[in-house]
Amino acid sequence: MHPAIRVSEIFGPTIQGEGVLIGLPTVFIRTGGCDYRCSWCDSLHAVDNQYRNEWLPMPIDAVWQTVHALSGGRPVMVSLSGGNPAIQPFGPLIERGHREGYRFALETQGSVVRKWFADLDVLILSPKPPSSEMTTSWAAFEACLEAAQEKPQIVLKLVVFDESDYAYAKEVAARYPHLPIYLQPGNHTPPRPGSEDTSVDLDGIMMRMEWLVERVTSDRWFEARVLPQLHVLLWGNKRAV
Ligand code: SF4
Image (cartoon, rainbow, N blue to C red; front, side, top):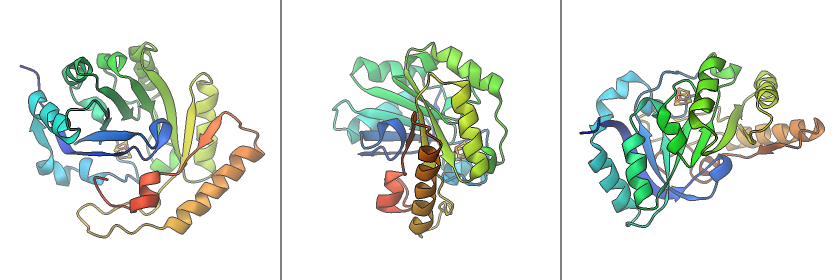
């Protein structure tokens, strides 16, 4: 009997809205619980203990049946998201999905290491910059890379709000020059959990996007890729899209 996965929501298929898999049809498993509490977290309903009673411990079978039903039984990319999905016991689910041709991408800040990282297809490491008010443990981050053993495709994704975040992103890129890096302007008007209001300051986001493009190109930082959050452009702060 495998341990249950604490699930906040499972939804899709929709498109992946950010990073290396942007635009790809995806089913999302968003887990509940996070060891971080970023100042601008856009998924507080999957982080704040206040919503803990909404995070259902689901057996692997039930999670898989839900993913299977949403995809109509056709193999699709499955995004393991959160919260911090690394906290959850995803190994058996990945094994099961792979047998049926599904692929798995995990996005995590790199603070919790798991052996099953090596079984992923894509590992997106997203260390949090100074504006998050979190502190990166580089030892834990390194352990995540070691656990992955270069088996999945590994990429970096950095949210950038301001100059100090940009400097942090450059530091991360200098530490790991072999890893592709994706930069995205932060959403400074994240959703309030439980609110029906999906509005977002798109003008502000696009201004930051322009600033980031200008910053990267004037620095001749030609390895960085700059992308907006496509789902935010399309649907604002709407949940489960
Ligand atoms: S790591 Fe991600 S989910 Fe956790 S608090 Fe930060 S932004 Fe939110």
